[in-house]
Length: 446
Length: 159
Image 1 (spheres, each protein chain N blue to C red):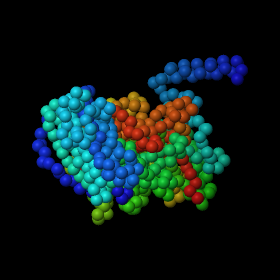
Image 2: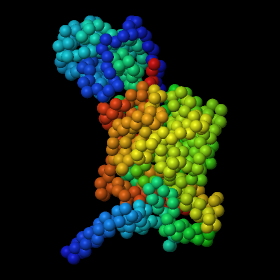
Image 3: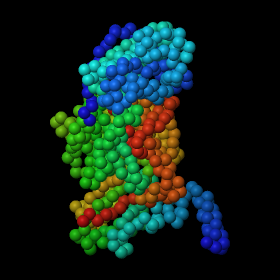
Image 4: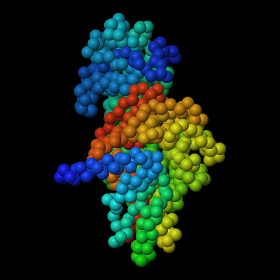
């Protein structure tokens, strides 16, 4: 994957820190903010160059559609129909006629301009507050033309950040397991795609079973479980170079891997003689440490973002529950006490919450609780769903859901879904094949 | 199917449902399950004549039932006679659990079977253990009977 270039960000104008329009993302947003995303203007020559290079007729318009779709998916914004726009993109970008945009009920306006400069794609964009009649933000940057979809995501990140006061999550990718074939013999491959479902690439061929890929939060490394030669082991994969290696030299099954927050360790389970324990391996000096020591199942470990604590899944009480311990394995405390079974704890990147899967009376729930176990909130209920993964800003969870088969055992499917921390805005994340075990990357830029 | 057969089947279903409702709080025996442990035979393969290849478990359990122990004793006797054969015990779980926990649970189930084979004289270096969690169901149904068939440890010849 060579097209991951560091983008050069040039700030056009210093921006005042206060936003006039604000979007409250802490409650389920029932009245999304009306936003007009003008097609980015483009001169004739640039248009021709991009068309030749990228086989896209109007890259300015394409990028604005990416921004529009991203904003719509959040549930916080309502992008207005472009047919109603009165101003030409190039004129609007210089100075919008605010009355025209107010007329179609837009509260904010995004304008921009793309051009082909020294074989690079240069983009500038501005965010306008229609009611106040002011520019809120302006930014320009240059990148390689093949990064054009990322340009749309970066614009969305900036717009989202300005209007909500929180970091965006649009210039990100999702790694997952692509699934095909009958339920009794699924073929599974590692796949990666942009957060909006585009640019899907397969990283393994499907010759061996692969499960639970997870991103390193600091780079483009991935850890996952592979049944290569029928030996279930944790592997490390560099998605830039494609090189793979087994993690550690364990005489049995290793599984449930995750990176530590600074990306220097892998934490995972090692199963031996019917007992699964949690271990870490330092990726620099290869030192292996045993973290838990209990004759029950200890698995699904996940670090707190400061690296000081680990939440994990154990059945030491008799059933699957969620526990928190210090990162050296001391001070083990059970935190889940509600009805039912709890699994797949995963610490929020903001540090304040733990997302989990819960099984109660034959239904599966995705929920969140505080790190001491209080404030449990169930976000969604279904026949089967599990494995939440946080967006890098901690506002959205992505997970997978499986359907119940009919009496003949037919009709099985597995799909990715996302839901807001508020419990609103549940939606299917489109994938080319059936999919499971999603893991959200951190922001690729900034 | 003639009318008599239909009536007979209907009667059986009626009896079965009466039995079920009568002992709803006790362990159910439906002919194919005892409690929620599978007791049928339609998924079983044989290592040799009269030596079934698999044992079944209750939900979240790794306890060997009387029938399972009987199967494993047969396997042990056969393995003692065929001392050149090594085996892999493949532990499995049903689809009603989280993926990672089920991997651990499958490993635990296969080890229950391994421990029992070892007490009947099979050396641990002839037995390797692996887990597929819920990845390789034998029955694709989403119902208690299908799940009971999938909670299993299967003894597979390794050579």
